[in-house]
Length: 114
Image (cartoon, rainbow, N blue to C red):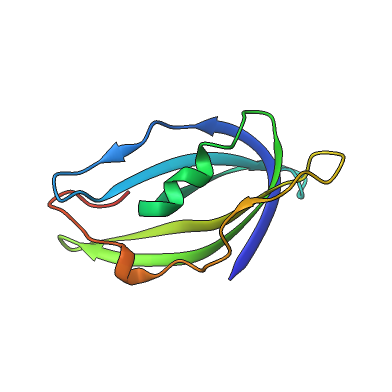
């Protein structure tokens, strides 16, 4: 389990594959270092709804797992977000489900999940 705080920069459209597998990606800018980093996360299956509560420019804390896989001899690393908390002033309620990412949730189709 890993955590990263930053500002939501981009929210991408949901993708659905022929197998029924779906995911939605978003980018958070981490400004903790001298040079800000844009970090792309993905939510899969029922976690996709977490992204629906986000707004560009919102400060958030993302809890995620590192996921790695091989597809056709190439290796991919994904950051699977499973909890997203708003860091807005006033202590807004977290937009999360606190169940960690379950690799059994990830059903691959002919297309790699990247």
